[in-house]
Image (cartoon, rainbow, N blue to C red; front, side, top):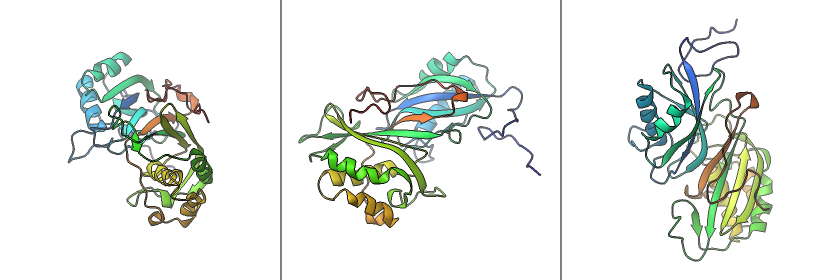
Length: 292
């Protein structure tokens, strides 16, 4: 027999079930600069996290304690232009209160871009079908003083053709054990990368990667390996050799968090969430629009 449904705040709601009377589920689109934040997830040892700031601001506007769930947690120093969260609340507030009102309670590094009441079956994490990141690299002899925490700098020239050749080994469904952090808690290392584009945009080199989901440090580890290929330290086929080894110690290269942006989370059209520009402002191009 099927299990009896028991409501849990912010939890998954099976088809046909509803939230308790008077409870609404709200989704938010959130942008943040992670330079001075200790990542997304709330921590006992660090007050400056995205989750802590948001929950405090939301609780103030709702006049009741609010907890939330996000589409994907990001590390310290990592940015987002299109993080998606949801929370359950009994507070009756117009959408503008969840945007303008909440933003008055947030630090300048965190901003709510949109708010929408969603069906009970929406879940910021489990309803997501794909996620996309952009990684920005400034390849120049001298580090820029204007974007020290917004991009990753390398004084080495990078061979984009070699990086593109290496990246092709990662397209498709694979066991990405070699490209995840040793402390990754995901039950399965199998993920499917649907796109990995590399292009020069102005003075920046931009990696754009989309997948059904990502492992802990997966994008940063992939970027670290591709940068080594771009510098000529390794041949493009090394990307495949690392993948096939299924051993994190074979590569051991992790790119810095600076320059990494969560830029898109895709959900089924039935939820009709507002669309945001992927960004960041340094890359004013649509998703999939890099000049390859």
